[in-house]
Image 1 (tube, rainbow, N blue to C red):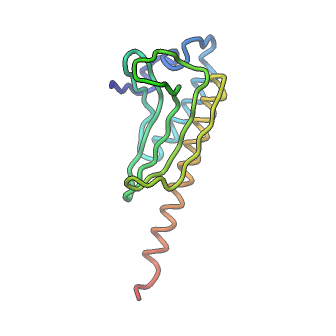
Image 2: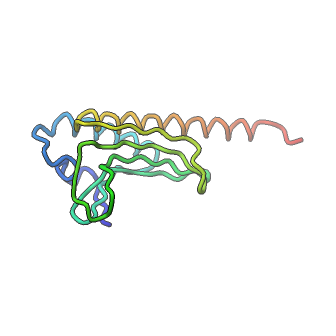
Image 3: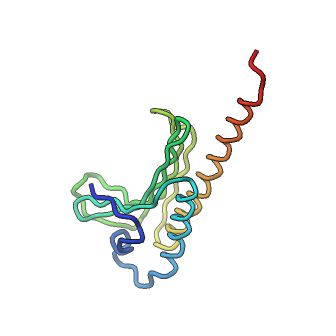
Length: 141
């Protein structure tokens, strides 16, 4: 699998029929900026000529993951959206601590949902930081 930073790729890798890339690119720029704030990067993952978008950040034993993809029945299925699925999750080891997912029939709502999912991950990360601060501030008994 090849990974390419989203700014260096082509939106049509994920949305082949997309005519006007401007609004979708703006939503993905927002998602990319949010991932950078978390310490990650939004990238295309290409496998067998089909791409998805995603990113992840590991912090304090937890992984924050976001993706926009068209689920397939097998790796060599070349069908590509709609629908597109946006998934965001927080995991610790094999345990999923928090998750949200949604489905979209159009590229722009899917891209906006990816940006919203990154914002949700930022909120989850802030909650983790607050928990850690409270643990450090509370006296050991």
